[in-house]
Length: 570
Image (cartoon, rainbow, N blue to C red; front, side, top):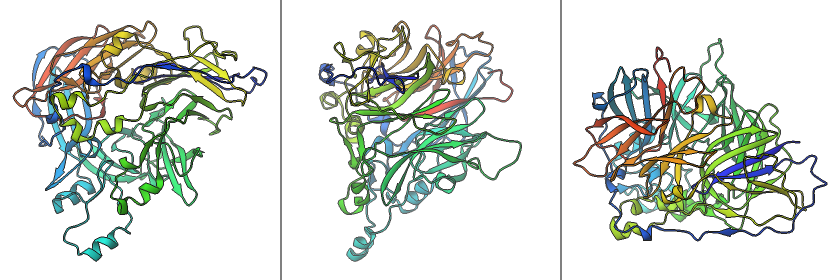
């Protein structure tokens, strides 16, 4: 008998169990399940929030590495490159982008060795960036911005241009990924750029479509210890859409022309509604399974197809459908087979999974999630440029905090350390009720996002700690360490400063201690007369070891990672 335990957080952390039920047909179902949920909260109780518009404004690149001043100490064993990716240019000529996700990719690098840190940054010279720069206007559409027709064309030419297929953006603004030892910047289209980590220059543009039948792929692949890469991407055809799980084999002794050589579609999943597939930013993976979460944030394909006529962006084609449940698909990594039982939970919206692992025939899946789909609108630039009372009214999404009454059917969860439940209903579906992994202190911190773990040693395995950004503001305003066993947490905060995604770097020879290492986070300021800095925390105590002041303005970014030097012990 196999169970799936899904643990997720409505911006906080919660656990739910999905039961896999080949032997469960004799368990009675239930007719209904009643939920109690906290009312959505907003920033109305926080008055006069600081203006953060500078964090979402265009900056200059720093292509030549500059040394940065160190305060405190950095461990001698910490040697390598901290990489960050995110938007750094929000307009071309008179044209301005509408959404945080739209800005041009700016890559950041912190080179760390022997206690010395150097900083550099460079805009990705994507086709999108070069075309926009040449024409001094937005020529290629992004997530929340539709490209404006060329004003130099006459009326007839502009009308006919609406029949042109939109050009896919290669603005790889979201993350760094490593495939067969090569490093790429990526976004959610099929385009990636292979990057030289020494110069931060694009060496080659790579298209997933040339290797597998997908029209896009996430910027959050997963990795097996042997270097096998897993990802997910949608495909579109005359009958609508499909979800696809992609597998890229590890590097072999035989040279290949491309890092994606040998990529294959491991499994294809048909959406509940093929003309309205779910939007997804990431997925879960344990040792033996890939877990895909079909959330009720739908992509209305007809609106995407007709965007040129309607003047709407991809963002406008997203629709939050709270009347639908969230569904979980579990796929065997070795066979590519989707397990036949259907697993559902109450509607939620999510971007990032934390971890997934198997225990006593269960799969435990941890997610950070929201109780609705408003988050996409919150980070429109028109909201992020507000200040004071105007910014107070931008809502912070409520934690998904569900309390279920006693179910009629039997709880299928055999795990003693979680209160999450999974109940087989009369129609054979398994209904999941989550368990919160947080306490009230985390609610006061505003929830948590951009989660990270000790990925190298605990991805796909039972783990205890994760790290993230606390959101007492529209953007993260503190760093948080959560103990998933005790639900206790530790916080690092400095007034007026906004930390980025925390990156865990394990200390070499850490003797099995999961949290022995350091946390790296780029901490930003929205004030021109103050400097941002790279923060180094002791991961166990969550106390500051040192910081390096950065003499240039850095905008708010997304994701990255740490690449150890070849001679580094870590």
